[in-house]
Amino acid sequence: MSQLAIDESTLLSERRIGALLRWAQQSPGTPGAVFPFLASMAGAALLPGEATRLRVHDVTLPEEGFGEVRVRAGEGRSVPLTPEIVGVLRQWIDQAGLKPGDLLFPGERGGPLASSVYRKAWKQACEAVLSGEEREAGVGERVAILRESCLDLWLKAGVPVWVVAEWAGLSASWFAQRYPHRFQVEDVELDWEHLAKVTALPDSLNR
Image (tube, rainbow, N blue to C red; front, side, top):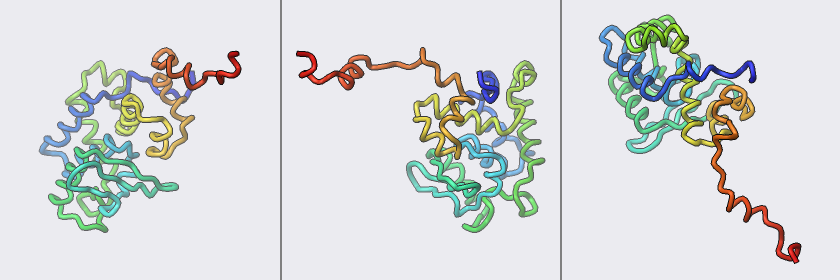
C-alpha cells in the first residue's frame, strides 16, 4: 500500500461532519465566520488557506440549485457548491453585510480568519462531539480532514475520479494512492452483458 494512503478510520462520515458543523453553528462563543468557513471546507473540499483567501466575488450563489466557488490559488479551479452550502453562504454574507470585494471569511479585526481561531473552534467541536476513543485514534485531529473527507465522499457517491481531481486541483493518480479503499477491484460492479456486446468481434470473423 502507498505511504500516501490515508487511514480510512480517520475520515469523517456525513453524520459526524453534520454534528461537528452544528456544534460550530450553535456554540455561542464561536466567531460568526467559523461555521460558514468550516461548512465551505466540508462541502467544497477547500484547504484552510484557500478558504481564508476567498472573497465574496469568488462565489456564485443562485437563488436555487448549485452554486460555484472559484479557487484562485495555483492554476485556479472551479468547484460546485451544493444548494445547502449556497444557503449557508448567502445567509452569512447578508448577516455580516459583506460586499463583493470583501473577504468571505474575515477575522474580527477585518483581516483573514486566523488559523488560531478556527483551529481552536475545531478542537472544541471535536471534544464536544467525538468520543474519547475517536479522538485518541486521530479522528478530527486536523481541520483539513474536512477536505479529505469531502473528497472521499465525492468518490463514494460515484463522481468520476477525473472530475474529483479537477475540482480538487490534484491528479487522478494521486487519488488512487491516497484513497485505495475506493479503488478495490472486488467492489466494482460490471455489466458483463454490455461488456460482451461492446467487445464482440464482427460477425464476419465468426463464420
